[in-house]
Length: 74
Image 1: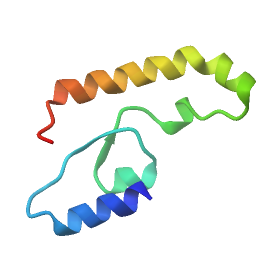
Image 2 (image 1 turned 90 degrees about the vertical axis):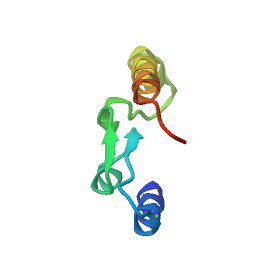
Image 3 (image 1 turned 180 degrees about the horizontal axis):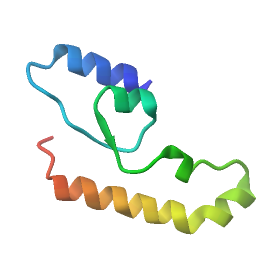
């Protein structure tokens, strides 16, 4: 869904659109600069979430810091 939205934005944009965040391969093909592989935070079940919570929180902060540092226009 995200890649389709990005493709539509790219098709209607007069200039290059820069995307920064987290996403999969299709979003990267549309120009996303993903901050880390989704596999870093992919979990199934509540126990897995608890086990990987420190990594997930770290990745969230890392992504927020990258977006703030990029000073996006909109």
